[in-house]
Image 1 (cartoon, one colour):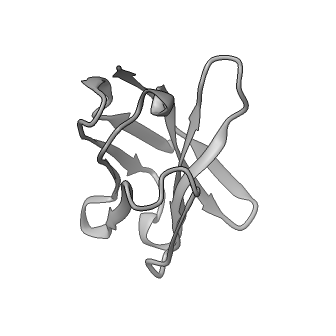
Image 2 (cartoon, one colour):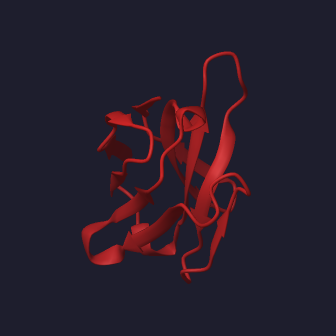
Amino acid sequence: QVQLVESGGGLVQAGGSLRLSCAASGIRFSIYGMGWYRQAPGKQRELVAAITSAGVTNYADSVKGRFTISRENAKNTVYLQMNSLKPEDTAVYYCKGVLYATVYWGQGTQVTVSS
């Protein structure tokens, strides 16, 4: 059974930091591309950051320079370090794993940034 379990969300003041984790099980994690997406109320889900199996990263323009995605294959975990958080970063953050046409999603973790 495949599971992606996010953790690390919460309430933080603007300018603060959070680190999200996504622990994967049931997949050969090291060969999957992994990503973080977010969905704010009334908005579409959007890509925040992604990392390939080779460690190549890309970011949404809105988070460049503030967020860092990384992976630790030995722990089957992908991270999202979020610094200088803004109220507009408030959303449910989802972890996604992709291998060709196979896609898995986590259940999401809420991040709320107060002004």
